[in-house]
Length: 168
Image 1 (cartoon, rainbow, N blue to C red):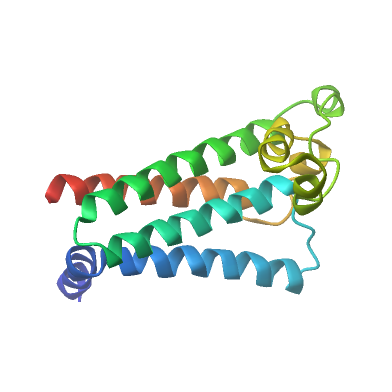
Image 2: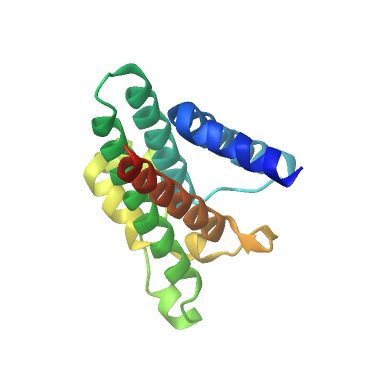
């Protein structure tokens, strides 16, 4: 049984890596949206930005599937994973701030799409990364919170893609 599972993992890693990365990133986005709806959660702007980074990983994996030179797609997945690690580590940092420090933050004052409309994409991302009280909420938890799970998945994508590049 154990050997069959390892063989399946090796087969997916060697032959279907890009497809698995794309499907899993899309699944994570869908799961987050379903959980928002099911548990009446309100995603903060930084959580929405994290979903966009998962989308960027899915797009990068699709690019890797479509081109013959897989290295470019893998580099895009690596860059997207690092961006995701930075965004989620910023949110984890904000979640661990004291109440006084959180009160001084003002970046997450309105929804992400509204910030894009008012300030443009670059300024909206800067304001979201500045954080705010809504980004500091721990929210729903299953062993870890959403930001911590995101960090784990981005780290897994980064590690697996680096391993895939080294094996090729």
